[in-house]
Image (tube, rainbow, N blue to C red; front, top):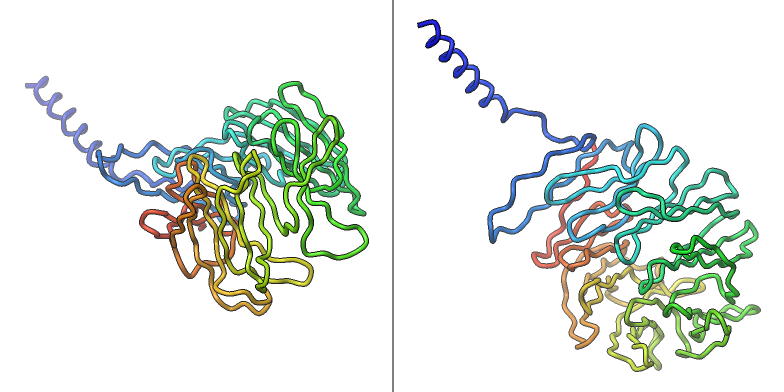
Length: 370
């Protein structure tokens, strides 16, 4: 009978432990969470917001892939970069630095991360890591401010522009694969890659204020320039297109968005109202979806001076190839956008704490502060 009683006692303990397991504390965002159970086949994935202490959170940086985001936060030993899976709750610290991490940027291949630290007021450290936290490239650069431009076609190449306190500048080319950093003869500080051998820039007049300037392409090695388009008020490089924004002739405040191919033809164009300011035009926030020929942008209701605009903005999706336009959401603020590579969600807000579901057209929290 003693063996039977002992067995009965063990079974009772087992069931008591099993019944208590459902009352374990929920993940509060400070420790590694366990993966959530797999979603049933055909069921839509639900975002699991990360709960963080308000004094620990700095901002969301970008998508690492279509499920994981990169978060800049405060850790025990300095600022850190945290990887968080929105659908499983898994999290992992990718990089931590006792120096102050100012910002970070996910590479165009989404396999590398640029980390900008500022150990001193007039100095910056530029570090490129892989997703395991391994340092691939590191340089210290004298600067008051600094800007980066990654090559979308070749993730080994990176433009770094450093500014002095008087806003004089120096542009450098970093080659991660060769571990080199060389100065580039750039006529303007804000340049964009066109391909491995050339970059884009606007030729702004030095002696007068202008709202537009011609857009040029310049060869890195021969330093020869070629006109791409006249009268551009804004431009961007988004492989395989060049985005050029200009003002429509005969209208006041209508912006024409043109997507130019590598051979110089216009794939499609769209128009939308622009807000004016003292010396420029306000281009609403936008992003291009990695895997699709789709462009997501916020749009103003009408063109007026920016300081008198009282309306909200509309989130729209444009097909670059066909020219089709779709309204996604109304009543939004003009705040930064970062869309997931598969185009299912776009992070929005100055800290990118909210995700807009482009299918259901609903906004969901990805970070909850306590």
